[in-house]
Amino acid sequence: MTSEVMANGRVTGHAPVRPPTPIPPAGWVRRYAAAVVAGDVLAVAVVVPAGIWLELGTNDLNYGGLVSPWLPLFCGLVTIVCLLLARAWDPPVLGQGSEELSRLARGVGGSSVLVGMGGLALQVPSVRPWAFGLIPAMGLLALLGRYALRRKLHAHRFEGRCVHHALAVGSPESISDLIHRTRRERSNGWVVHGACTPGRGAEDGADILGVPVIGDLDAVAEAVRAGGYRVVAIGRAPGWTPRRLHQLAWDLEGLGADLVVDPGLMEVAGPRLHVAPVDGLPLLRLTQPSLTGLPRVVKAVIDRIGAALVLALVTPLLVGIAAAVKLDGGPAFFRQTRIGRHGRSFTMIKFRSMVPDAESRRTELAPANDGDGPLFKIREDPRVTRVGAWLRRYSLDELPQLFNVLGGSMSLIGPRPPLPEEVATYDRTAKRKLRVRPGLTGLWQVSGRSDLSWEESVRLDLRYVENWSLALDALILWKTVGAVLRSDGAY
Image 1 (spheres, rainbow, N blue to C red):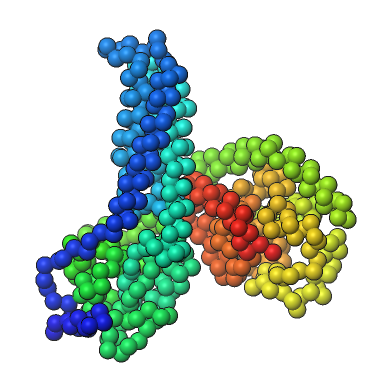
Image 2 (cartoon, rainbow, N blue to C red):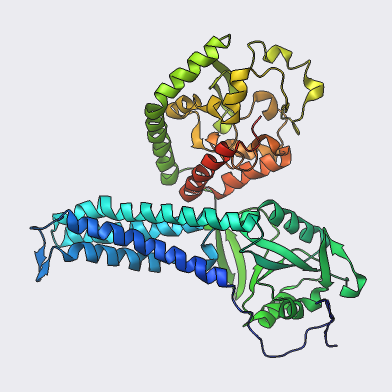
């Protein structure tokens, strides 16, 4: 049976075998990738003349006829080559996620190591400023340029521009989940415009959350040809078999559409997933999360150094806030028992944002609770003081927690620190987030804070625990600044 493409773009039946006609690539993809490359090269081009102007190593380098003015050019060229080898310019990773930052860091770090080792082997001390200062400066400038481009790209996506049209394939439940996620995370750039689900034909006129069903599982390839979809997202559905998925992959070859498959297991990604073939059968190997070892030591060092630096910078602000809270009546600080790593309790310190007898009034306010699950939140909490409302709006009441970070009971980035009564209600899933130190900020902070449901809050915390990396921490720090300034979910 062959498929029929109807006038409205819906498809029924089986896709015929015919040569692929590639979907023209979106112009904005090429322009954005070119802008990223140009920004990185510009960052290198800014630092190289600065090195020449500073006359670094003027009298130190004369090896094999190579004179010092070539050293800055050589370091710049090595950095560009390392970025290329680290695949820092691959379009699929540009504009979203922490992988872009990770690849940029690998490229810049590799360049610093190569230049440093070369200088050590050739006994050229003039490369030290490049390995430890100027090449990292190139990376910092490139990062700032990419951040500016990403902000502009995300602004376009919130307006419905610079997006990929996606075809969702699977059961109605898995398609609904994907639609919800793409609508909630618009910065990802996927917009589901069509769906294919088992046993449903285009003639049914059905839709899922407003997305038209344009065919069944046999109509996917022809739907891609007819609709020009850039992404084909495969979810769970009865009837999917490895053979069928293989055939779909073959049908999509040469069309220019990305085929993405939901493994349907858990929210684990990044460096923990590896392909381990067994007799030609590709299996996903899931490694243990990095909860201990050298990466965590590095994180702890960064936490303490970062907390000390921020405290040194904001000390005058802390003094001013403490005075304002004290003048508002009552003590300046509020201390509360929270649960940290491995279930150990600690005393968390915050600026007081409520009246002194707030805890004793909690019972009488229980009927007004807006929180989901074990969380206790009231959108218009009468216990919040005038100064406290302003502090909460910009999360300034959280600043004293830097002392907790300095003392080691908290981290700069991590899950939300829970109350003992909340932990008492935890199931096995929620308890897993206690395997790491709670954070001053985290995925919950940059994803809506108090607007999150209990289920969403746990899911975000577990996603952080399962997929932790230094690059993810850096990305969360970037997003925290915007979330605080916008006061997202703050009350």
